[in-house]
Length: 274
Picture 1 (tube, rainbow, N blue to C red):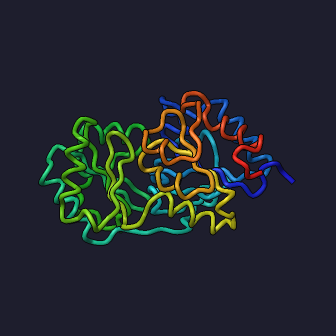
Picture 2: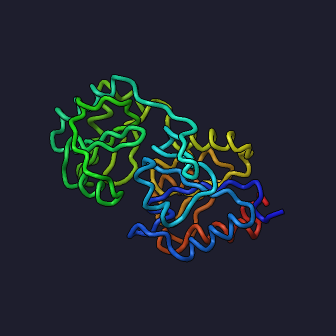
Picture 3: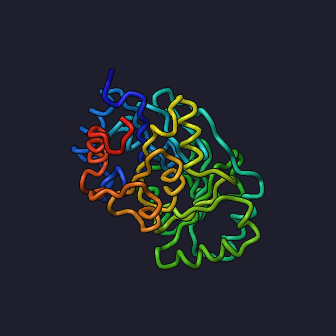
């Protein structure tokens, strides 16, 4: 029997597990490997597509399937299989066109099951391509034939309020799930797709009761899983809304081995799920 048997630890990647410079720290790595060796199930819930998470897989490997696309896909990195997914309907093309015509400076990226298409490029889009090591794939959104899973609208941080207001007042506001996943990214997802529902679906697949699920996050797109988990935890650098929703707020930030601190806390019986 391991110390962490039948516990699922699901963490956000950017600004939660990863440091500010997009690394898995040695402290977090060692703690996660210890957690897994003692029977714990460790995985991610991320807005990234599986292809965009590959740089992280080279640093740390989950031993349970991951929630990707902000909850629209459950993907097993070990087998390379998609266990569950939800796609956008054809109306998403009209939503992309609406934002394109209304806010011409906003970048547009369309993600399918295995590709990221850079449909309208600005500096934020190019930086996203670099960070997640995507190959060049510059294609207009009207020309993408595969099923779409999500759209990223990308803008400079100071322009995000205008983007959000435009979406809120658009004909598409109630047709899809929209979520801010970073200061620069606003995502369009299938209705009802979010990390919380994805995490609960994953727990059901694994046969883990909700009370033994721990979720850790920092940004608005983590709110659903923070609320859905048996124990929802915010790192010290989390947005105020995430801290307010969390059961616990860590003293440690993403640059201070926050996930290692969560694992130590769990081992010591706090939260009380051991």
